[in-house]
Image (cartoon, rainbow, N blue to C red; front, side, top):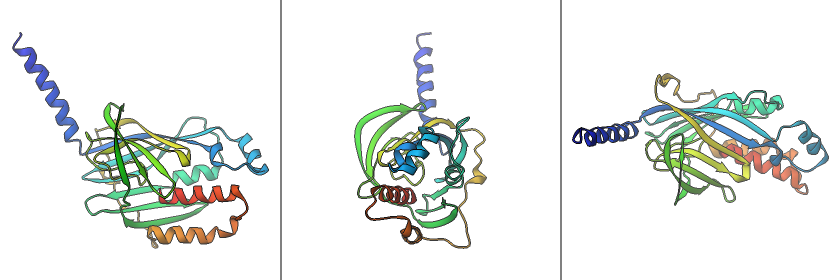
Length: 251
């Protein structure tokens, strides 16, 4: 019995490490929570809208990956969530596809009722890995800090037990999968709630296609041009709104 017990323990540890090392396909569910009221301004119209809004908008997204390719898109809202239709539609129609083999990605974004499709190289984020760690969805994760623009910092927890260098939306580039993410300037957080390894719908992992596609720079310029009359330089609320819009485009 004394001989068999260490052998059984070794087999258990080896099985666990093998399962983690060779997790090449799965579906990850994220809970995405945004403080809606923080994203709004302080003018009289916004204050009236705040009274009708919940504090948080909480939705659930699925990140499906296999063979170093992935697709990330909306799945469902939390029960009994009451938010305007335009806020629902923006999230429900957004899709991100990544092919880490070819370093290409494509995405679909709903911006105030207009659907844009972009194709480009995978965006590069400069990361600094820290010594802070935590466990998310049963995986050991390490904290990293990065920037997606001059003033927008992102804080991620990634696991090297899932080798694809992906994450929610367009956040990527760490030596493993991002399971937790916070972007303070956008008042939004992402946390993996479960990871499903059986019956992965690999056929759903395919590029976003459209008759007309932009690259990221041209899409951002086009949206800025279309909304330029909505922003007043002397109005801090409208500037805040435009900043939030442009940050969400590059995300």
